[in-house]
Image (cartoon, rainbow, N blue to C red; front, side):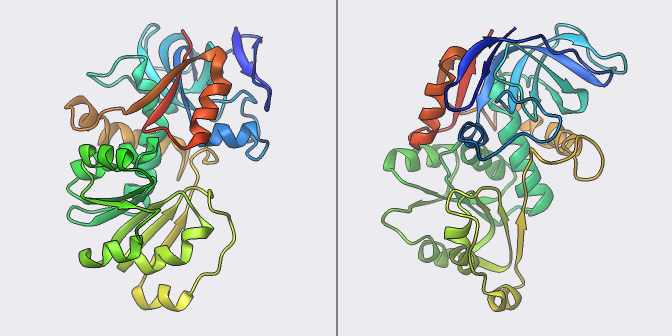
Length: 321
């Protein structure tokens, strides 16, 4: 099969077809999602977990080609999408059956590649970890990103209010179209001040990390929760524990890729919660994939450059089959 291999120079290469283990499903890939983790892996900063494929790609959509001997409930030819630990930039990928999702009603097989990573990230961090409740205010840093555009829609559908930061009027306007209530241009506005009339944020979804740590603490309302899922602004910063104690704050750090496949806190648990909680919202049209651009598999390097540019609004996809 054809796959994209290498790091700095991404090269289309013929590699052996994957063989599904007894608990795995072999997917003939139609499209793959592009993620910030792929950019980091290409740069040599985010190696795959032990045992995972060295090929980039953390989510795909396609059709089932073969089933492992222990897999039940699926059929060859079923349209699916899947959360991966690696291997998505390829014509075929084998993935544990517990990480496979049906393509939601109303979404094409191709566009479904935009869903697994963002949907599972938002479900695990905003709802399973931070327990966002109806009426609460969620602050999303990077509201126009793939994760941000999905989080806006799911949080709004859940009855929460949404604030976002972004860096251009175009991005903020798109966030507003998706359901964001408070629009903050981080180049010209202080997000702490912007949230004060609203009593602060109850939950913050943060991809920045160290650069925003102390300011996020100031922006949180009493009993607020913050989940840090990225380190674009660095990994080390001072934390004023006095403020954390006084406001009864909770600060969480999570990654999706490093979770175990099964068991407590696993990808399987997150995928099941996503299927039960988010897929009905997609099927009834309240949540839709937001796609910025599409590239052929052979132009994976250009797709990653598009992500690095910071100009994308929503997900970037690779067309494979």
